[in-house]
Each structure stands twice: as C-alpha cells, then as structure tokens.
Image (cartoon, rainbow, N blue to C red; front, side, top):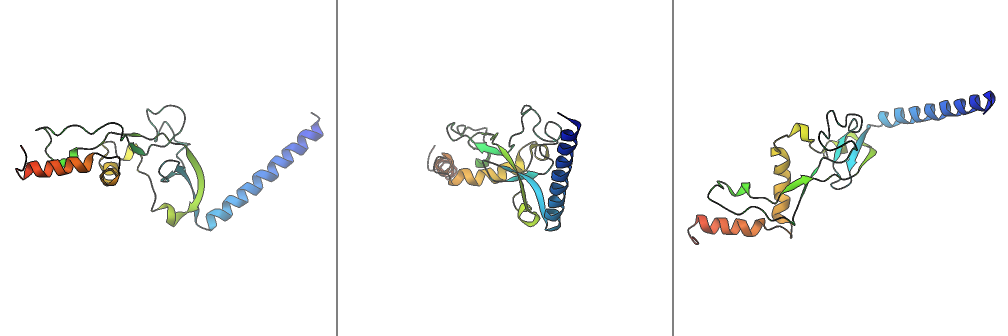
Length: 161
C-alpha cells in the first residue's frame, strides 16, 4: 500500500469517526442513552455493561458478555413442602442466569428508567430479583406453584394432614 493510499484511508477513517461522534452528540442531546438489552427479558443494563464485564458484571459467568437476568426452570419441580418450610414464599421453581444475548441500543432515558435489570452485584442474595420472578411463577401455566399454594393453605386450615 502506498503512502498516498494510507493517507486516504486515514482521512476516511477520521471522517467516519467524526461523523459517528457528531451523531452520538446529537443522540445525547435528544435524551438518548446507550443501554444493553437482554434478548430474553427485554430489560436494560447500563451502557458500561460490556466494558465492565468481569469486573462489575458477569463475575463467574465466563469471558463472553451475556445477560445476568434470572430465568425460571419450569422443567425442574419446586422443592417439596416439609416442616422446614416456614413460609410458602420459600417454595419456587429453581432460577438460573438466562445467559441471553445482550444488544447495544440507544433509548430514551425516561424509557430506560422503567426497564432496568437488577445486576447480580446489586442483589447478591436475589431478594429483589425474586420479588419480580415469584409473581411470574404464580401465573405461568407451566408452574406447579399455584397447586402447592392450595395444598399449603388446606394444610394450614387443617383440611389435610
């Protein structure tokens, strides 16, 4: 490649970079922010999700960025009700990290504020995420939880032993 061709390629690259920079400025002026959308749930992770993978996000999930959103495994039954169970809320189908693809989007900041995913580092014990998942398990047709709730209530009322 000649020096002239290299200079032309460099000039083209600068032009593209400048255009992208201007576009990003225009997008930011309109209130759009970068987010990474979970391909499974549609929830958003912050714009630094990929950059901070392995440091702030995805710890223990391998080198390739993926969604940390939890997903229910309806193929595995919930644990049996035993005397160790103090509250019916302890009974759930198992959950796991969905591992879905994440895609970069530019979205309105107001929209993003209603769709944030809860990263694992902000909810290590899963209390906040379980509050979201449990109601979904109660209404999913594949779930065994509603029948278990009925049994639990009958047992509490002394209708079954």
